[in-house]
Amino acid sequence: MPVPFTCSVFIGVSLDGFIAREDGDLEWLVSRGEAAGDDLGYDAFIAGIDAVVTGRGTYEAGLSFETWPHEDRHCAVLSTTLEEGADPRVTVYRDLDSCLKGLTERGVKGVYVDGGQVIRTFLREGLIDRMTITTVPVLIGSGLPLFGPVGGDIPLVHVSTRTFGAGVVQSTYAIERRK
Image (cartoon, helix red, strand yellow):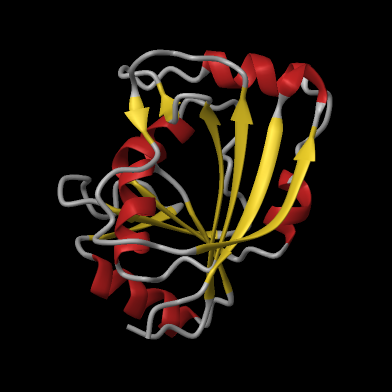
């Protein structure tokens, strides 16, 4: 399904591929990200983004931050259970098609896709253009995986790899959208 905007991922993972512990805890990631000594390119990435799409779990994790992480950007939450209108900072969509339609109607140009389930959904639909994955050197053993079934091979083109302090490695890949 063609869309008139680009979709990008910017996410941190453990070396064994988890984005959070099973209870959603991110301390293992946050503490090592701080030790890396840089913003890891997030500020430059987010400067080109005008909308964020997350799932309910990622949205709720954002509520625990000191400041709302998506200020000045449209935030879409894909959820079948989150009450519509409960938070004026977000628009709740029940399915991907209505979300894509809503983003198109808003005239967005750059979408930040965040959260494991939502990222996998966008990958399955061939909607992701670029992924930046920051790997921290820790094995957490179990948790919420970044990847899972995506409906077939998704060829990636390596764009760049950067290293930061504390052994943090960040790789960016381009993905050719499926026709």
